[in-house]
Length: 166
Image (tube, rainbow, N blue to C red; front, top):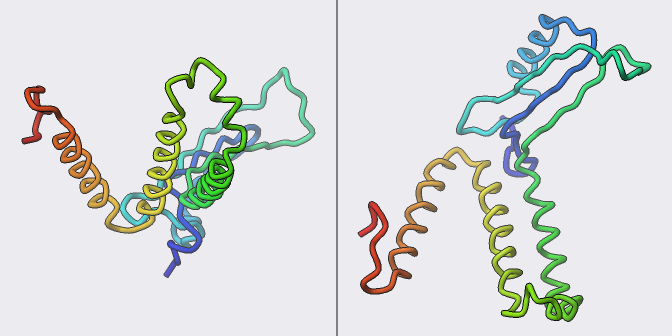
């Protein structure tokens, strides 16, 4: 069994391969990855690996017969966001660089935008962590219900209601 929580897992992968490649070899390699579970994928959805094959550009000279690029969405990115948030908190607690922002007209009403951005990054961290578990879909539905109830509580008397929220 793969340990998803410590190492994370892939949500999706896009491979772009340029050059002289046999598509059947690419297909066999993808099958091997899936069958041998060489890469851990999200437990709540299919292993999403997309491959784009293209010919070499006649305008760009390269020494290699084949080149490639892999773009992957992996849940372990939450550790990078958490580290950035930790560093931000340290700077914010020391009020480092804050005066420069206060002097700009954009932040004349306050620095609440920084707090809003921090909340967005924190929720992104929580979502990437939650996406590693098999009940991620249930987690998402609970988040939607919570957001709808918060919106209903914040609505002022006499303000029209949100569709589906009572």
